[in-house]
Image 1 (spheres, rainbow, N blue to C red):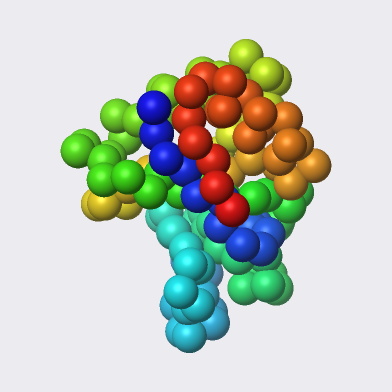
Image 2 (cartoon, rainbow, N blue to C red; image 1 turned 135 degrees about the vertical axis):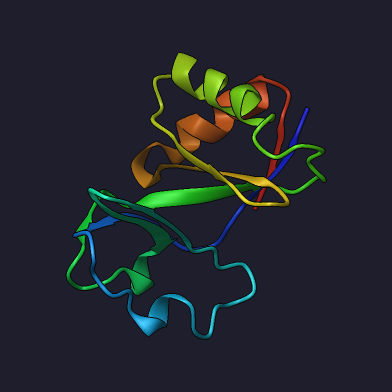
Length: 128
Protein backbone atom coordinates (compact mmCIF):
# COMPACT_ATOMS: atom_id res chain seq x y z
CA UNK A 1 0.00 0.00 0.00
CA UNK A 2 1.22 3.47 -0.88
CA UNK A 3 0.28 6.87 0.50
CA UNK A 4 -0.49 9.23 -2.36
CA UNK A 5 -1.19 12.96 -2.24
CA UNK A 6 -3.21 14.75 -4.89
CA UNK A 7 -1.36 17.97 -5.63
CA UNK A 8 -3.41 21.14 -6.03
CA UNK A 9 -4.10 22.64 -9.42
CA UNK A 10 -3.96 21.33 -12.94
CA UNK A 11 -0.88 20.17 -14.83
CA UNK A 12 0.15 20.27 -18.47
CA UNK A 13 2.17 17.77 -20.50
CA UNK A 14 3.97 19.85 -23.14
CA UNK A 15 6.17 19.34 -26.17
CA UNK A 16 8.66 21.90 -27.41
CA UNK A 17 10.83 21.75 -30.51
CA UNK A 18 14.40 20.55 -30.04
CA UNK A 19 16.71 23.44 -29.22
CA UNK A 20 13.97 25.63 -27.74
CA UNK A 21 15.08 27.79 -24.83
CA UNK A 22 13.06 27.03 -21.74
CA UNK A 23 11.26 30.01 -20.21
CA UNK A 24 12.62 31.19 -16.87
CA UNK A 25 9.07 31.02 -15.47
CA UNK A 26 9.29 27.21 -15.42
CA UNK A 27 11.82 27.27 -12.59
CA UNK A 28 11.32 30.62 -10.87
CA UNK A 29 9.07 31.12 -7.89
CA UNK A 30 7.81 27.56 -7.60
CA UNK A 31 5.08 27.22 -5.01
CA UNK A 32 5.44 24.68 -2.20
CA UNK A 33 3.85 21.72 -3.99
CA UNK A 34 4.67 22.65 -7.60
CA UNK A 35 6.56 20.09 -9.66
CA UNK A 36 8.30 20.71 -12.98
CA UNK A 37 10.14 18.02 -14.91
CA UNK A 38 11.95 18.40 -18.22
CA UNK A 39 13.26 15.70 -20.59
CA UNK A 40 15.46 16.47 -23.57
CA UNK A 41 15.87 14.24 -26.63
CA UNK A 42 17.14 14.87 -30.13
CA UNK A 43 13.49 14.95 -31.25
CA UNK A 44 12.27 17.58 -28.80
CA UNK A 45 11.75 18.67 -25.22
CA UNK A 46 9.01 17.30 -22.98
CA UNK A 47 7.85 19.37 -20.02
CA UNK A 48 5.43 18.51 -17.24
CA UNK A 49 4.46 21.56 -15.21
CA UNK A 50 1.57 23.36 -13.55
CA UNK A 51 -0.83 24.37 -16.33
CA UNK A 52 -0.36 28.08 -15.57
CA UNK A 53 3.38 27.72 -16.30
CA UNK A 54 3.05 25.93 -19.65
CA UNK A 55 5.27 27.61 -22.26
CA UNK A 56 3.25 29.64 -24.76
CA UNK A 57 5.00 28.04 -27.76
CA UNK A 58 4.42 24.46 -26.55
CA UNK A 59 2.03 21.86 -27.86
CA UNK A 60 0.00 21.07 -24.74
CA UNK A 61 -1.89 17.88 -23.96
CA UNK A 62 -5.20 17.81 -22.14
CA UNK A 63 -5.32 18.97 -18.53
CA UNK A 64 -3.92 16.54 -15.98
CA UNK A 65 -3.92 16.16 -12.20
CA UNK A 66 -0.72 15.20 -10.42
CA UNK A 67 -0.39 12.59 -7.69
CA UNK A 68 2.75 12.20 -5.56
CA UNK A 69 3.82 9.15 -3.57
CA UNK A 70 4.28 10.66 -0.10
CA UNK A 71 5.76 7.80 1.90
CA UNK A 72 9.49 7.37 1.44
CA UNK A 73 10.21 5.31 -1.65
CA UNK A 74 13.19 3.03 -1.16
CA UNK A 75 14.00 2.98 -4.87
CA UNK A 76 11.98 5.47 -6.96
CA UNK A 77 10.35 3.83 -9.93
CA UNK A 78 9.61 0.58 -8.10
CA UNK A 79 6.16 1.75 -6.96
CA UNK A 80 5.02 2.70 -10.46
CA UNK A 81 3.68 -0.75 -11.39
CA UNK A 82 1.55 -0.76 -8.24
CA UNK A 83 0.05 2.54 -9.37
CA UNK A 84 -0.19 2.08 -13.13
CA UNK A 85 -1.69 -1.42 -13.14
CA UNK A 86 -4.91 -0.48 -11.29
CA UNK A 87 -5.27 2.59 -13.51
CA UNK A 88 -4.82 0.49 -16.66
CA UNK A 89 -7.47 -1.96 -15.44
CA UNK A 90 -9.83 1.00 -14.93
CA UNK A 91 -8.91 2.31 -18.41
CA UNK A 92 -7.49 5.55 -16.96
CA UNK A 93 -4.48 6.93 -18.84
CA UNK A 94 -1.41 7.83 -16.83
CA UNK A 95 1.85 9.70 -17.35
CA UNK A 96 4.56 8.89 -14.82
CA UNK A 97 7.94 10.22 -13.78
CA UNK A 98 10.32 9.74 -10.91
CA UNK A 99 12.64 12.04 -9.03
CA UNK A 100 15.54 11.07 -6.79
CA UNK A 101 13.13 10.89 -3.84
CA UNK A 102 9.74 9.69 -5.06
CA UNK A 103 7.35 8.84 -7.88
CA UNK A 104 4.66 10.93 -9.53
CA UNK A 105 1.82 10.15 -11.84
CA UNK A 106 -0.60 12.26 -13.77
CA UNK A 107 -4.14 11.28 -14.73
CA UNK A 108 -6.46 13.24 -17.01
CA UNK A 109 -8.43 15.76 -14.93
CA UNK A 110 -11.69 14.44 -16.42
CA UNK A 111 -10.87 10.92 -15.14
CA UNK A 112 -9.55 11.89 -11.69
CA UNK A 113 -12.50 10.37 -9.80
CA UNK A 114 -12.18 7.03 -11.59
CA UNK A 115 -8.41 7.08 -11.12
CA UNK A 116 -8.51 7.72 -7.39
CA UNK A 117 -11.19 5.06 -6.89
CA UNK A 118 -9.05 2.53 -8.81
CA UNK A 119 -6.03 3.38 -6.66
CA UNK A 120 -8.06 3.08 -3.45
CA UNK A 121 -9.51 -0.27 -4.53
CA UNK A 122 -5.92 -1.45 -5.03
CA UNK A 123 -5.26 -0.63 -1.37
CA UNK A 124 -3.57 2.77 -1.72
CA UNK A 125 -4.48 5.81 0.39
CA UNK A 126 -5.17 8.96 -1.63
CA UNK A 127 -5.41 12.31 0.17
CA UNK A 128 -6.02 15.83 -1.02
